Structures are given as C-alpha cells and as structure tokens.
Length: 180
Image (cartoon, rainbow, N blue to C red; front, side):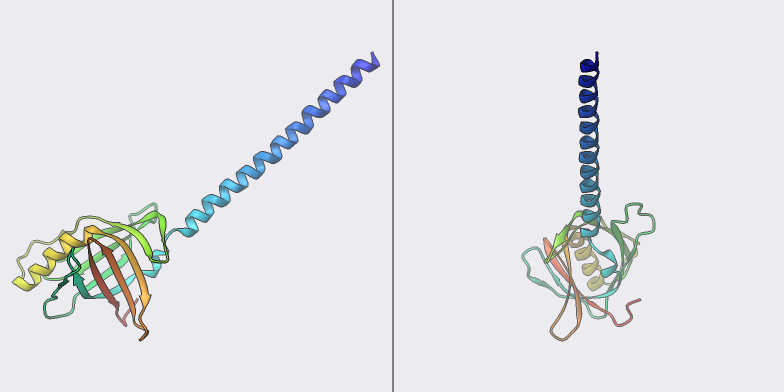
C-alpha cells in the first residue's frame, strides 16, 4: 500500500512540475509576443516629425523630369488626423487656387533609413476654376500625390529641413520658419 502511494506522489510531483514548466514557458512566450508588439509600434513612423507647414519647392513627373511651379509660394500643411483611431495618418492641406486636402497613411511596416512608407488618398478639392498656371499645379498634385509611397525628412548641408515624397514622381518641400 505504501509503495502504491509513493508512486502516486511521484506521478503527482511530475505532473505539477510539468505544469510549472508549462506555465513558465507560456509566461516567456507571452513576454516575447508583447515585446514584439511593442517593438513594432515603436518602429512605426514618428508622424510628429512631419507635422507642420511645408513650402512646395520642386515637383517632378513620373519620368523625374522637372515640372515648373507657377509664380508664388505654395504650401502643404500636415496635421494630426483627429478622426483616426489607429493614429497612423496625417491630414495634408494645400491652398493653390482651390483648397485641396487628402490623408497620408503611414504603413504599419514603417520604413527604413530612406524614409517612411506611405499611401496617399485621392485629393478632395473645392471646385473654383483658378488661373491656368494654378490649375496645372492642382492637376499635377491631384495626379501625383496619390502615387507617392515614401516620405523622407532630412537636413541639407545648409541646415534647411527638407521633406521629399517619392513614388511615381517626386515632390520636394522645404520647412517654413513658422513651424508650429
């Protein structure tokens, strides 16, 4: 009888030690999953880097041939998107002849040293007919901005902060001194 009881104790002991090993294993696994999730969120784009008012200084078509800008200064304002639960997008606003706006969504995969992966929605615009040069710029932005898939911020040797959108075409913006 004593012998049987001892065997039961050993079985119970090995059962409980395997449960504690299993529990340790699950704890480690959960920790790894949580840290991986945390890492991926911290790897995502820091969109606050891009918030501000940017002067459009250079525009290029799909063949990367320069597109002339009309006379005057034109700006793209990037601001946090308050309607965005995921926090993965910015609003872009431009006043050319019309008021134009779109949403820039940052890819969950983030980006690398060459910038952050983005997708740009179609532009919505008021429908007044501006002078021809402004209309051409609006048409260019409506066609080109949604084809951008990368945004990069960098300083020139002269210390000027530039924002470059690339994809099928290229749009280069310069920081304005009145960065809010």
